[in-house]
Amino acid sequence: VIEQAREQVASLVGAAASDVVFAASATEANMLALSPAIETADDKTPRDRLLMSAIEHTSVRSGGRFARAAIDDIPVLGDGRVDLVALAEKLSEVAAAGIRRPLVSIMLANNETGVVQPVSEAARIVHEIGGLLHVDAVQGPGRIGVDMAVLGADLLTLSSHKLGGPKGVGALVRRRSDLHIADPLVRGGGQERGMRAGTEDVAGIAGFGAAAAEVHRNWEVERQHMAPLRDRLEAGLKATTPDAIVFGEGAERLPNTTLFAVPGMKAETAVIALDLAGIAVSSGAACSSGKVQSSHVLAAMGFSPALARGAVRVSLGRDSSDSDIEGFLNAWIKVSEALLKGTKGMAA
Ligand code: PLP
Image (cartoon, rainbow, N blue to C red; front, side):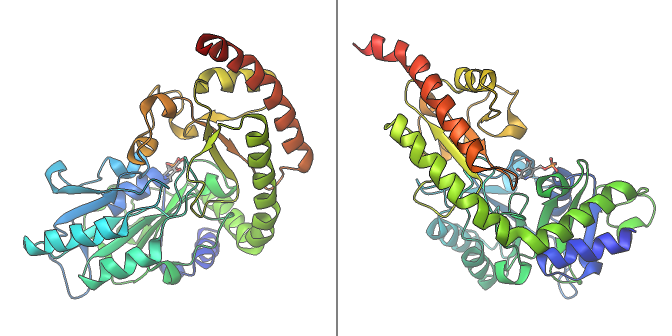
């Protein structure tokens, strides 16, 4: 059962089944990947630097097994895309300092804004100087195509529950079978070719495989279904509240994600008011909601903490329909009118 799921997950991203390592979450897969002890057949010297974009998920931002002093940030542009010029500059800077084996981590699409990152361009820059590229692709499958060879990713992280499978399963996929992580996070038995010890969650992995197979068959149809709904939602939002800002609007984005803010409106109040109207949205990133923290992603894009505190994320799924969008927009007319009444009064 596990080997069938391994085939299904591998096919989804164009990898070989033997290069898929199952883990208990994408968080764990990210931790496993971010290690100085990544070896190739002809290079067993430790990776000497980790470069990561400023908008990575916190599981990457924590830096894995790299010391703080060995980590550098790559900034993003105002539209939420990684700054490739800054990446190239940072790589030549570290190369000039004698650091020639960097590991670079750039996500495929951001979990707050949905902005799709220029991963294949980044891969070319990273490979030119002998670096390796890790891609947290958790947000991609089911929404955009994810092919490891096209992306140029050496290591790629996936999460089962983000593509319709059960929670509590993730995977780290290698592009080359000679890529070996010499210090696995979980050590003990020889499961997962020694890369992740411990008896596997067979049912969870089977569910992950089935979801991966489904997404592999249908993602293009789902994308074509969701993108026009998302566009309608954003057009309606702006018609009702013309000063609404859709973050990352100018960049290519996932077809299911809209992150927006209206100056003067707090996210928490909007989320509660929409919830009372029967609509579930989140303030900022769903996986970090509950923590009252302003978004490091919006800060990296240059937005003020005041505006970032108003960021509301609306996510669509393959079951979302025209009437859901209509329901949202009708609720938004009432909610925004009620919430902005106070601020307009204050301004006057
Ligand atoms: N990476 C990204 C981009 C995510 O959006 C998430 C979760 O939302 C994760 C990693 C963590 O995934 P998991 O919940 O499987 O640990």
